[in-house]
Image 1: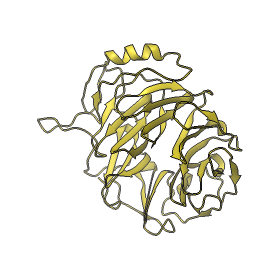
Image 2: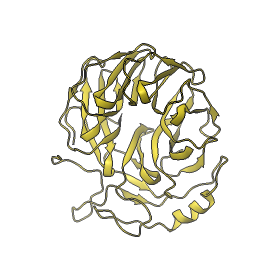
Image 3: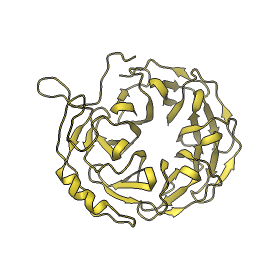
Image 4: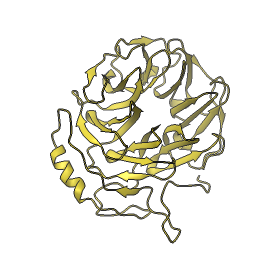
Length: 333
């Protein structure tokens, strides 16, 4: 049940709000990778899409004005959220977003930033890249597997997804497979001081010190793990039925008592503070390096799928273009 709070949007002169995003005309620049079938037509389609508003969306726009948003990241003074129907939206403050007009090739499920470049990925190996969060290049990975997690670390991008598939790239354009030692769906990946950790179905945890050599680690749960966050050597993984796992180093894991039974979907780990989001608008926080968590009052009951932090602001995204914010991690609006 929602309480009054800020929906992401842009105020009109009369004080009303547009839809969850203000649209912005953005065309594909020249793609730079193989498997581009359909992208030649995409550019001409994108050029014809019109800007339109309305809190209930619109008809005839050619794109989704209230899409589910599945992931968000912060980098280079910008927030980028991704979701259904190839939705990509950027923001300078975490609360007001501009939706990039791209052809709906499939859902985007993960996004990361590193080395002055954005990488978003999702259904059937779809990947978009951008150097400014406004103009995006689209292409497909060598294997058409749905990718569900993305991370930047140790000078490389790492993507993970269905059937244990993993791809790594040093430039965001040329991708190499990186066997993860598992065949289950991997739903999140994070980079910490010691390496990468990917998590997924059946409580699967797999660790790599370099993005290339992966080893499955003992897990204290069989519940699906849906997301993971990391800072320095601390990793926090979250999943179904309120599951919270903690590790220093990424190899040995312990289960942490949870104040909720809701499915938890993502975590952001900062120095001295951790925020977790999940089903039904669930928001949990920790101020003791993830040893204990407290549930916060949420301004929404919509599922939240991703959370990040930047410019002094937490931003979490979820169903029907819902975006909630907090300046301190305790009061969310």
